[in-house]
Image (tube, rainbow, N blue to C red; front, side, top):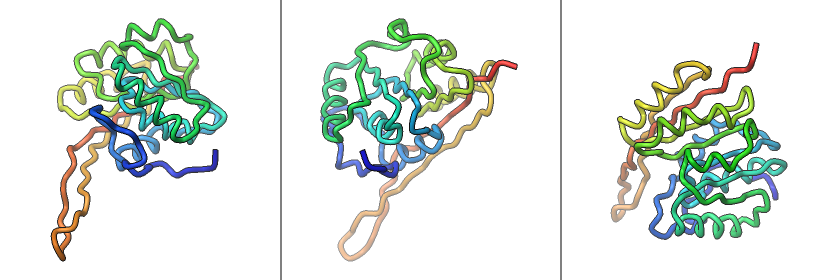
Length: 198
């Protein structure tokens, strides 16, 4: 796999009817994650697998586990992985946090969380057991309520280095001979690192 900058064009992914993280948000999510070539990454609620693919491309000596409960989405993740000839991307069917039982403790360097809905609090509470010390979680949310949950959980021990940004993107589109901008839905990116033992 050759080096590919984050933020692949949306059109490179098969989407179907499954929501997909947009290009600009993916690029910034990868920046927040600060992935290294050997990192082992868990993508919770992977959807189409667009973040999983980006992570797998940035971690050629590591691996990415895409956790998803929806059968259609799992098929899309596999198809998108095949499009990029990824051998370090695997899928896991199940719903977080119950599906975490199938994963080895302290086996991940980074965890990406997409949305999470009503279960986000329980997902974030379970993550310290999966991360290695110093590991990082990056959580993308689109609602005030889930953003508040992420901020509340990740601003207290065992988490450190908390950060949160709201991303608002508008894309330029032709309007005859003119250029207009269509706004995408705002997204919050929240991150923190698991404290290392003293």
